[in-house]
Image (cartoon, rainbow, N blue to C red):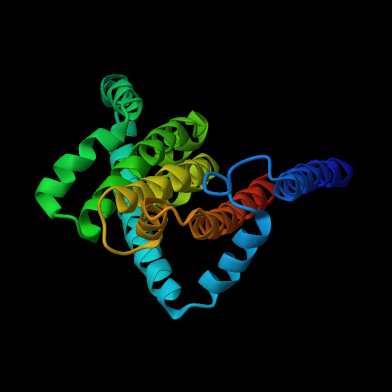
Length: 253
């Protein structure tokens, strides 16, 4: 993407957020909506400053992010492993790829009650839900990535006597990595959202728990403050992954 295109994109994005904040400010000044349902921007800003300067918030952030991080890492290991195994055989690909794609269309939140029965209301049930949500996009992109590697490269490596491990390290992973990286970025949002959803539904700690608790107590300004904090964290991680993906794309171009 040219620099002018990137600048135009950033200006449009900035304009969107400025317009959103302006509309919220106008609504707050005119009192168009009941503040119990939609809080004033000033109240949210005050609560946000209170939230981010409270020691307990660090504990909630750590609970949510450690749960998410563990679920994400497990999903990466399982997704890439399963994706590689499926891609080693054309029969496996034709058989299991449609099955994985079909399971991916199922609303995975319906399995959360089962995870609670197995793991309780602690972090393990949220970890399982987040891992399940991230597994499918990673596995499917891994299959697509390995299958996209040029057949001539595979043939050349085999003709030089490359072992299966050498083929994986020297040919398959480098060739498939851009598509796998896209899967990692795509999997981030459902994994993070699933962990938060689990905390909102059944938890006694974490950012999702704070959102749920403040909603039940009708503390909407404080609830919005936690929502904004979650949005900032998610946007920051997504930006990091997107930047990494872009740089890797340029390096391999």
